[in-house]
Length: 399
Figure 1 (tube, rainbow, N blue to C red):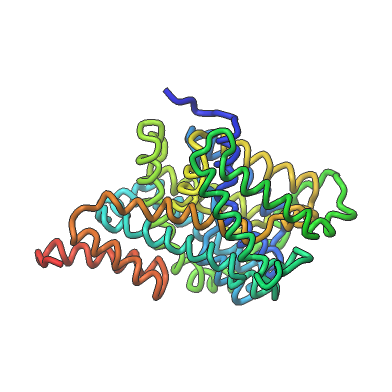
Figure 2 (cartoon, rainbow, N blue to C red):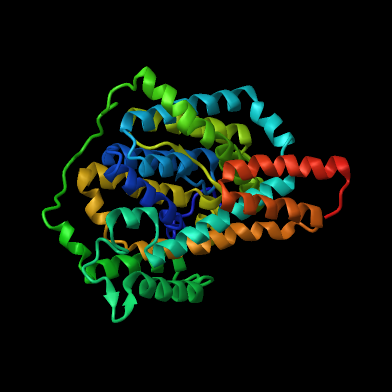
């Protein structure tokens, strides 16, 4: 039987697989929305460690993307973001503790779950390509494809494209290499490039110390903050969270780990996210969730046990405690195109989950969710997919 915890280079490589999702949103919410970097990364690290210790398998930790994207796009205040995390935590705790999520699972056909996984994987791949092209929201905000590198082009080729192509080819060649894991090689190579291409300038003056987090650094949100957060953030985020971070995530965990994922239930996922958001609220961090895309990323690059959680969690706990706000200088060493490479391969891994659908009607539902997601968002795609699946089932229409 596979051990609950393994600590080797494959687990380390897999632990880094989801940085492409985590870092851009985290950095943007620190720079734009003013969230506390120590509290943010410390809460993420603690969630990784505690979730891994409890579940005993690789467990993803991600930002809530609807909230993150909207908050960054509108330069929202920290109090409103914290209010959304606390509200979502309360809702998820209720849904999980009462067993209401079991009813949601029973009412959600398998093609809908596969459609959510297909749509999420496609979004991850598109996001990765945007990072390589310099077209992501974060890069537009900074006004450069690689804002922390001194060199922006390699001859006539933009640096992001050059790094993305080289990193993609190297990752593809090493994807099944057990001695030199692709994820580890990609991240370490990216850090080396950052050092060689000028990102090290921010490291000057960085020193070690002890930087303890402040409890509720922004105070308790007001009534207006909670009201705004409920309608602008929580209600749009909730369907995506239930579809991707609960149903699609637990389904994928069972597919990857079989009996070892016995603790990864829909109820447990809701409760663990609720507790994580309570912790993040206290530390001034961002709303957190699990996610099928994150699990696919960790698994594709080698993570299969909770050892990967403990390793990445330890890094994300120690860095803010030792560096404080200077943690950003270290993270800026990693070119955004490298994060794009991780996203592309993780997205492809997740999207391929649709291959076990054999009926045309099931494939239609999955592709419909993908199309609606690309035109609108995943929450709308999830709800529309459920409606379409039941319509096809009740009417017997062949597609």
